[in-house]
Length: 227
Image 1: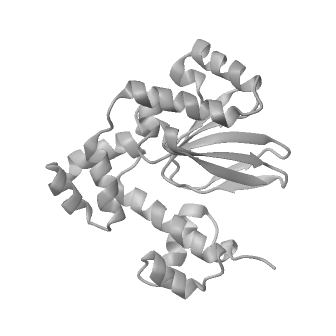
Image 2: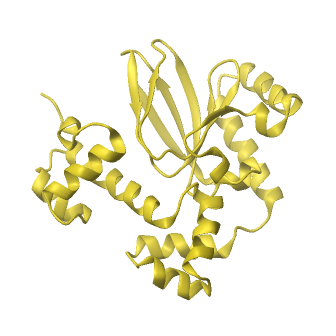
Image 3: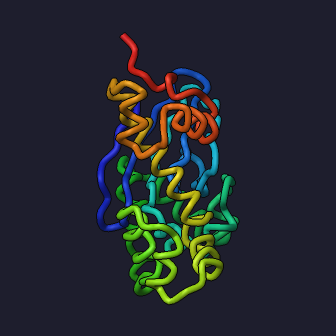
C-alpha cells in the first residue's frame, strides 16, 4: 500500500510504502529521495531508468524532494547520485546520520522528522540558484533548451553543467522523464494510448511506446488499469 502527502516546508512529498507483493518497480521522476528503511536512511538519486527492488514485507517512509531541491538538502551535486542508492552516512558522515536514525527509530512519525530536517538544511543553504528556477519554468512552458539558455545568459553547454548539478541530468532528459510520467498517469486513468500520445506531447503512439519502454522497462500497456 502506498500513500503520500505534500510537505511544502521541505519542497517535497512525504510518502509511505508497505511492500507486500514481492518485486517492485520504481519509475524515474527527476527527484531525489530520503528513505527511512527502519535501520538507516538511504538516499535514492535521480534515476534514468526503472529501479527494481525486492523487499517483501518491508515498510519504507520517504521524502521525495522536488527537482533541483535535493542537492541543497544533501550538500552534494545531483550528478554524483544519478542512478545510485547510497547510505546517508556516506554523504553526511556517520555521526550525523546515526543521530537522525536514532530520532527516526524513536518516533511514530518519521516522515515529519525527515521533512523538518530537510527544511532546516534548506534554510541553512540559502537562496536557490535562480537559473535552475528559470530552467524549470521554461521546461514547464515547453520552451526549447536553446531559448532557456539564452534567457539565462548562458551557453547550452554551461546550462547543461548547471542542470547536471541540480537534477542529475540535462533538461532534455528531465523533459523526457516528466513527459513519461504524464503519459503513465494518463494510461493508468484508462485513456486510450493514441489519445495519451497526443495529450502527453508525443509525435505518435509509436513514439510513446518507444519512450515509455526505454524509461520504465515495460510497455505502456503495462500501466493500463485492470479489472
